[in-house]
Length: 388
Image (tube, rainbow, N blue to C red; front, side, top):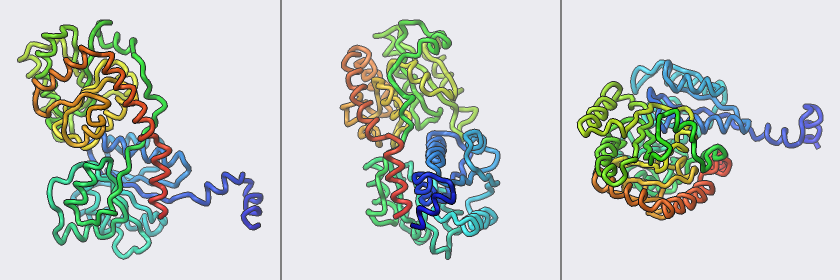
């Protein structure tokens, strides 16, 4: 009866009371100076959790794009200077937040954050530590230091079975501590369609065959291979056009775009390649494409590929990392060898030459992505982990 009385006194509906009683007090961290897929996804996750009524605080690095975007999104954000991996003032700030605000569910989104978060929770027995691993572990990390870093980890979340196997093999954690949790997406806006007006704004001909790469400019992302594949594609399809969408990675500002532009000039294909930079309207950007290309050397699990599948785009991706799993090992798109411009060109040509089949596979990929990556389903699983 006291629950009913509480509802009446607070003038809440039963549903509101239940939601309030289940509110989580979350601390997310992402002390990254960059603004790429990892950072965008961590912020999207925070927005979704806050929308569901949870009390979420995001700790991030001061004077970064992440801080600006978090505040623009209405996220309760606290930004700190980040001086080093062993930033003692930052450790103390985080510890104070956890203790005084009761934020005992801590979710780390950047591996280097563990160096300040792990010391911050020392002795705080009620603090539960979670970590999203977005990248493959490059080698064994089972020394004494890493055993201590991971000793408080309740769960490590990964996006694919390939990444799960890598984490279990190289990190000092039990296999059952690693859970595959597919990325959650707000899927409503990403639908099949053709953004004619956006295409016209780019100066593209109505009959242009647009091949798009949506990724930050970075040697590991394979844009150079895409550029080098274009002469062979243009021999077969003269109206093909390559869109490179994204800004340079933090470590390659001022160098990678220049390197790519020089290669475009050397190959004399400037009329068939466009550099768009970062685009806020991802839906129109994707709907301007006829084929989505993921040329990465080794992509763990591509967020942009998920969005392309949601738009039912014919897809070409490199046969490495988590991309084969994303494309159903060829069921939802075409796989090509990594670091092989000639092989990539042949894959693109095969798709452009048989668009009916490619579109059929694209729609099958959309059905899979809708089922696997719906945000609400993923959040229900995530919150179950937080509460367990």
